[in-house]
Image 1: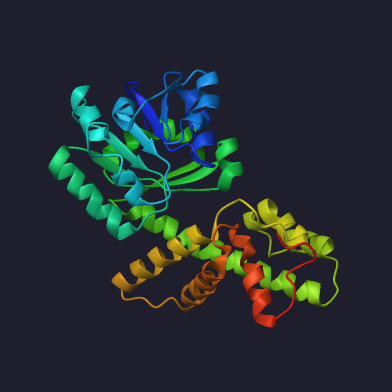
Image 2: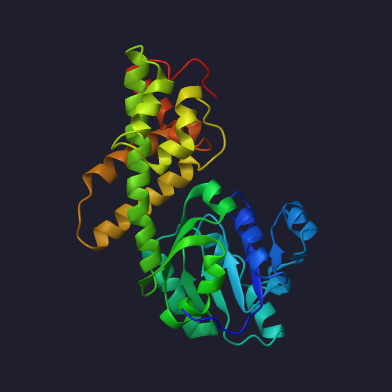
Length: 306
């Protein structure tokens, strides 16, 4: 992909992923504009040279990256006097690109992209990311892009500021579908490791040694490398939430149904995460699924359950 004329950039949504992604983009473009509903989250970026917008309309730029949990939060940024649509119109930006980095429904984002292009001339790219907060901080995310190919090519330099693996997957919804495939593996891996550690703990094995063995063999994964200590310490606070994992699993099964596919493993894992959220653990990291598995066997998940 070739370099293009530098365009104005903005990041909307400065949470655990959006904040570090914005810092990476700020290194790429010192004129970056940032916005977050909780304005205090923009302050560290402002200290580094970013401009904090007062509203989505104020943040409206040639390319707007959104790092938000779901499509409804992206859609909420568009209407009204303070919305992106008004901002683009006021600034004379006639062909903006709106990048959706959140994990969203492949079906819904394709419909959203078609509607925005037809009604407002906005090109939507679905570009979910994988790699967690560590990948966001280090700029090593995997970014899977769906939508108009020329638009995707035009922003690749910016995407490469945030990720080391950037791939165009196809038309609208393709990036979100690729992320759905990724999430099948992530959710299943988290659940499988939770079962393994629960069995190891029950049998009196040293969990630190067990983790070392898993990481040294075929069972190794980024999940183990980034989150292995959670199972040892039974510290499941923060991180990628179980409620978001459940949301993703719903998207996976919806996409599978559209293709006439049955995914029994994903269905089983979705049932477990549904149970976890119903038990009040939805805000915990998804590794906390071990708590749900432990409850089923009426055993403790560990000595210091958070």
